[in-house]
Length: 459
Image (tube, rainbow, N blue to C red):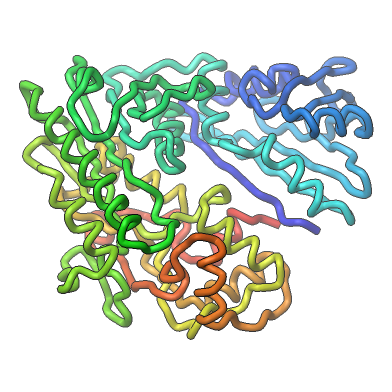
């Protein structure tokens, strides 16, 4: 059996309002653009059948020719809706569940495939049903009537079209905040307000920081670190972060008052390969400027905390999410039988579940009445880092894969050349945890790796 992938999101509306959109299956393509069309053969109820088409030319043709109708298998108003789609030599099960929460509803989407064709069906279908699931939930929320709450924050997100940027934009939108993305190229398919900038200099975009009302800035801009560690690439990693931060700080300086909240991205890789050092917010940085220290330290130094009433430098560890590049690659390797320890296997792996990372961002924006974070550095990592050996063993267990031989460091380095990535991403690590979050009383929803991976790859 192929694993179930799960996505969960809070929406600031009552369950009956969310259900009003969800239960109209023919509206599915309106809030999920990965679905081209849905045609029901009768009213939506248990036993009702219908046809859907994925929004891909080849996939749509194949599905239209060979797929049988889906059947509604669960229909509990305001609570749960499930469909069963026959696949060649298997079945797809898709379920949405609504759970009442204070101030709104938690929606959970689960996708599961069974049968001999499960792996192939997942590869073909999942991109259309699950890609940008949280963004799709924000579309659903607006379709259900969600509008900005009273005294909503105006949140400007630099790097907002990146993986984490889209996640936090969707999460805040679903909670009734106003979101604007700063992007080098506008994407008309996104349901968020967008303003173009070059990430280097003051321009018309800076007016976004002078809009009336409470303002928050989230700076996530920067080139992806998944690249060869050449001198040129390292320079681009550094300049993409420093230049964008410098531009934002300069734009904030044009305001009459400081920004209300500022979340400045950084990384736990600022400690480079920390070995057995237990890194927290007060741990000194290594000397001699190792590669990522030389990128992240000037990145942090480019930020001016005087530009904000409340500011957080968020040193983020590896974020676990089904669509995150790191977890995708680890999952693919494990499923391919390459789920053994990497190199020596004793390197530390610090991590955080996407839900907990989003919760920390909300706390940094003053949106969590139960947690108040002090200004300054916050490490976004759980209290339970693991070594690479434990990471790979947990992945194998969760994904039902047998023991795998180790991947020697030499093989990883050769593979990294072919994949145009940095072998240090797999061979180095650090034990990073947060004293600040502990003292603030932050409660991790997924504190252990087993809990996190079980949630992300539920069975």
